[in-house]
Length: 413
Ligand SMILES: *Cc1c(COP(=O)(O)O)cnc(C)c1O
Image 1: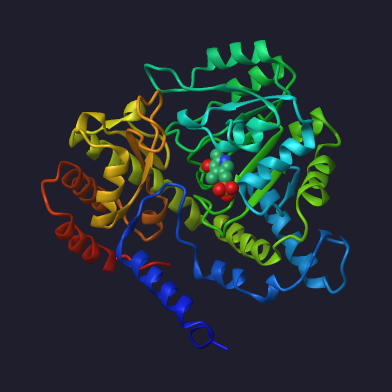
Image 2 (image 1 turned 90 degrees about the vertical axis):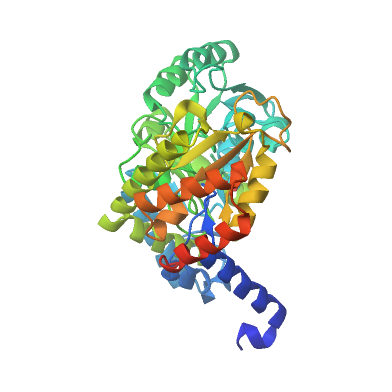
């Protein structure tokens, strides 16, 4: 029975959301548009069965094809990221990180990560998250002048705190990570080093951001950001990781199941497999390169319009704008841009003088609009729209119409 017949209310709202996506610019850097192939796997009968355990070691019967699908997914992830072991069962990025803690740490152990207001993630030891509550968390950040990671300071903090686990990765850092510097720091205190590439996995696959794999013990990622798959998480163990701890792969698998989760979402795992196949194509490499080209063009145009960008620009898929010189808060900018048809999110800037629920910045990125096929020419147009909205020099309703027109030329996948 079709959804429209069973539940008209939900069907109508989904249709409305499709229309919203079609006619506006999705510029939240952690979001993307999935292919219809990915969504077909996601909406399949694979959601029906329990598959607790791992391929060939399951607790339920009838899993012949589920085993094959999860195995294919694991093989593809191993090959694409060049790692020794993968676990594709985490429900999302946060549960993936949680499993890493459960595999390596006991409650009360010292861990270290980048602080949330300076670009890190909740799960890297921020106080309101389990990671800051159940572990002794020490946090590093960025330099006050340059807004870049201050590696000397990171080293000092690590040497003093001697953490068991160090996280490197971020949600709002527009520059490239120097994995090697983190390796040196982690090795000097004999810590496990985990890189969380949730935002940049697609850029790494495309070769436009260096891979952490040769330098770290563990890599975690989401599958739904630049990697362009369904919502999900993957944990990877590198060769370096196995060298440090020969039981690391088993520890991770046990932490995911039965440590943290029950039945894996195999429809999701099938859709991740499809996304990994798409990500290993030459077209995806081109896509990743274009994300960065678009973002750099957008950044240089925004600078021309007088915007103050954190770190003065970008190396990757995202831009952080410090709006203080424009006399508008992040929240108001987000709301006004939404009215015009540009979806961004309010965000703290490093050393933000304003509170997190009303921060001084916005974060925007190019993964989703690049998926639609937009290029440098469209970025110039978007920068001038953002400028018009923020300076209030043209009504949002007028810009909304112009954006609708542009969107018609760039259909969703
Ligand atoms: C998005 C993100 C996560 C968490 O992913 P969820 O799927 O939202 O749980 C973890 N770490 C980083 C760096 C992220 O950007």
